[in-house]
Image 1 (cartoon, rainbow, N blue to C red):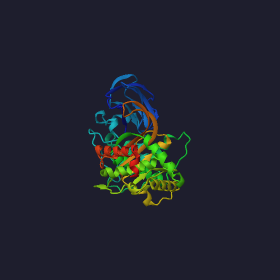
Image 2 (image 1 turned 90 degrees about the vertical axis):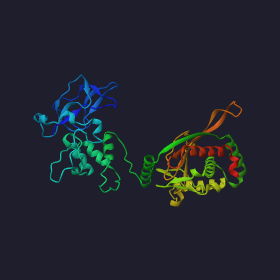
Image 3 (image 1 turned 45 degrees about the vertical axis):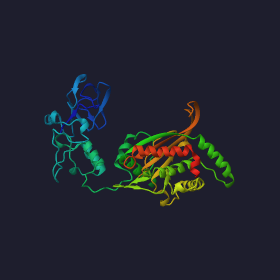
Image 4 (image 1 turned 135 degrees about the horizontal axis):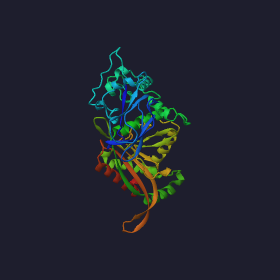
Length: 418
């Protein structure tokens, strides 16, 4: 069945354009992805690619034609076995869908054909048939959005991405069909294929879930570290004989644990149809390992000494790097810390680890000009932090209270010894 090639909408506001130049001629065989012509819009000259394969049976709009309306037929594509004599059977232009709408829905002016009954002829482009075969799709279950209900490439790809609700859920394959599409793009380039291990699959699954289902918002503050750095230096000198050396991260863990007690509504997790508000401050800390990360949890951190938190964090981090943590050591908690300051990162946004209600992204402390309490210009060590918040659990004002408590604890570190 001949296919009308339509003037595409190359931008959301485009209503018409100029067909500047054809790069194919009548009788040429084209495949999906081949450049057919150059089209001028009010903003740029762009190439227009074929979405189906076939033979250019007729060019309707000549080179240099201005004012060609979006969705107007510009050429006719013939399928295998068809000839120019079949062009009269091509669908009327008015019934053709907009190019931008094909992948999403069937055109309102051309009712979609029902799925073919067993034994009936299925109208589908050769490219659609080939992709369906590669993906194991039954064409009789698909509804075509092309002219006269014809199944086109977009229908097959859409079915793969959004399977019908009544179809049984397929187990995720180690290498999805999309991988073939991506690899085809780099067929002429040298690359190394890296299969996903179990950890990377879990990270991909959980963080995709997090960004798709958690309504993130972000709160940022700057924290002055000079008092903390001086206090830490003095403590480490007095603890040197015991072999204890506290890190800035140890103070951050303690400050956050105390803040969760000071603003208890932030010490919460999302549980589907309810919120669970925890009593203890169980703080998770992201630890980078080869091929991924762990988030070991420091339980009851609010009641622990800085030295005990430091010792446990060192132990958990060491065992995380050798993947020797037990599940109960990296599951749970209501809140997490991700510190990239030691790697020179000054500011970033972290992704919430469900079901946690929030995560604090910690950047590096840097010397910066500030205005001191006396209104004079001074130099201070400033650390930027960003709190990523699940809006289902914590509202903006509540998150701001929590971040203020963290700042207060870190800028007045002596309170963490009380």
